[in-house]
Length: 163
Image 1 (cartoon, one colour):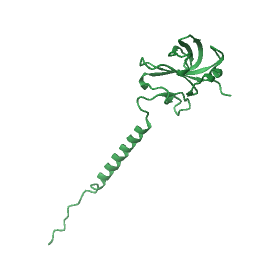
Image 2: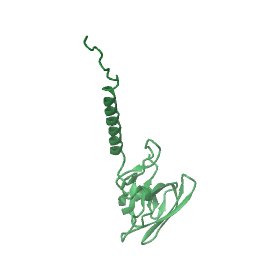
Image 3: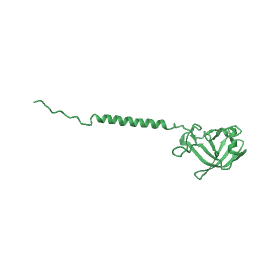
Image 4: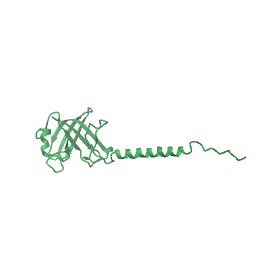
């Protein structure tokens, strides 16, 4: 009498490797997609309150390690232009008052370190932020980007009221 007893293979023996491979490929794919979406560590910043989380997000204007970067967003409550630098005081949206200075780096003014709504600042843009030379328009808003690395100068992103 022939031996009709066959050893049965466990039912999951072929399925398990495929499930493991599918899970591993999915995990690696998600990790790769997340790495593509994250900004590089030397990212810079742009004032954009419309970012999904309501936070300011990176942009190409200021190269600074994100761990060394701070932004002060609010109304400019103090503004004094000296021959070599401009002094600012910002009453922030977080109810603090922050003071900083922007060196002119040998120029007549600090516009090399200014932006206007994230765009490069020109001499003609002073008319949008000042009612007369050295006197800001009342309620002028700005975002000051300050890097504490000791070498990157602050950047002021002016945000006048839009008509």
